[in-house]
Image (tube, rainbow, N blue to C red; front, side, top):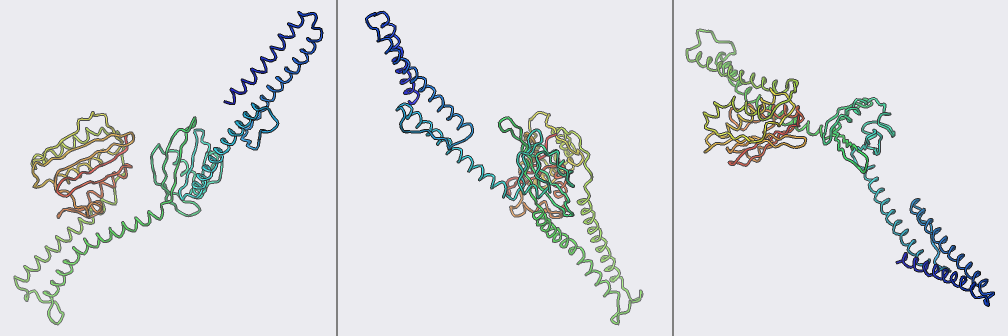
Length: 453
């Protein structure tokens, strides 16, 4: 609307000037109009001057308006009095646009300050690095956790924990890792994650860093309490009968005055009781020794020897290995129809040990089931592959689901309780996860999530 009025006034002024020029030309053809061309010439000069001032004043105002937008100078104002009506409307439009931009800028700055306040006070370290390894953002928590100064370039960081900083750059998108670093003699446990994304024309790597020492201490304490409870239970179950049998044998072999009986005083029945007691002691001692051996296995997982592993081939070989037991139990096994190009990177021997243990547990869970069925499932993703084994057996009680990975806890009467604990430890060593889902009397599904090769 304002632009239309400006063009209208410009057109009117131009038309009046053209009319004056035409009148001047006409007056030269009329010799009796001697002074008329001179008067019209003065009028034309006045019109040209007015038109020039009108255009120049509009251009100047437009230049001031655009410069105000470019420099974000919202103190610029445009007068509203003693000016042409068309210019007045134009000035009002300029002021309205500047006020709108100013309000938008203030809102944007307020939002930026709000987010900046959150970033500076959030109890998680945040570092944003662009493709040239320039630090676009770093909050005080990140500087404190990593003990680094406020520098502009990541390459300029020279600190005693440079190794930890190097490990940060080795993370891939979406990866999380636990770092153990020592700064000024204090050991820190940091959970670090990386998220990579593009912002306009820049590639950004956003690191989040959190000190989880307190959480680790709490979980470690809980784990020690659970482990101590299990160890105490197992040891007491073995030591108590050993102590009782030993005391009984001492009573049999001693006289009332405390002296040892002579061999001639021992009856055949007494000797048989002693032999049975010694056999029991031997049996319980072997059980205790086996318990200690299981504990040793749990605490000494061998180093990984990673190689590329084709998932379906590995699971098929495990099914073939367990085929006789599956056939003996009358269990049907279903394999997915995915292609054979799902590959992971890991230690095949250790992973086969994990899946053999899971398959064995599924076989035991199917004892006494009608139409026993074990189903394998492969679910590939961008960064992970889920390998799941599901049975339609007895299931697991809901209150025991969280305990099945505790060392030496077992839902089976003759189980050592070490299989699932060891399996989870092996999967964790592969930077994976293992989860269990179950409904009592319906199914149990173990899902192993491993990173792609």
